[in-house]
Image (cartoon, rainbow, N blue to C red; front, side):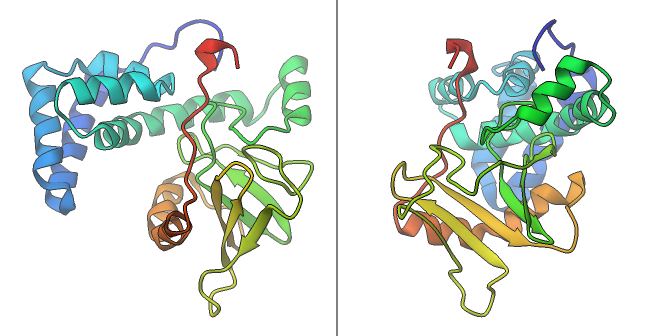
Length: 230
């Protein structure tokens, strides 16, 4: 979403931040999530700045700020992402559902990068429907295909890029791993692409694939830093 700054509905999203903190505290994140909620209520974390950083995909700013405040960086990032993602999904739908700008159409047709063409996030999962591999962004739900079957992070397509199913009885759930860059991506076979509300659930339901990849030393890279023009 390049161009003019996008105004966020901060008064609407601030209670959502707090609700996610409460839900995560009850659901297993415990005191770490409760402390984030307290920091938001006390003003130690400024909601508008946190939400804006999430919208801009500024992972470094959020995690650094969380660390300075003695809060769990990954959890602060997650809370902000969960709160902002429905708003971002609506923006993505407005722009990409029926694009009329010729430049946008051309850019989408030519897009051949592993990161999301709408928000710049890495995909959470690749969904394979009828043999077509579609990368899915869990932040805005955008879906896109690459011209070649290769590592989405570095483009490796040779013997260093491997797809494997950790569970022999679930060949429909696989992990793409790349020993060239050390990245991985979860892949699932589905009858149809998942709607936005189910993408985050699908990401959580396949955490066993994350664990299998990480046990072998693979990881999801940090988001690209577009502020540096890369």
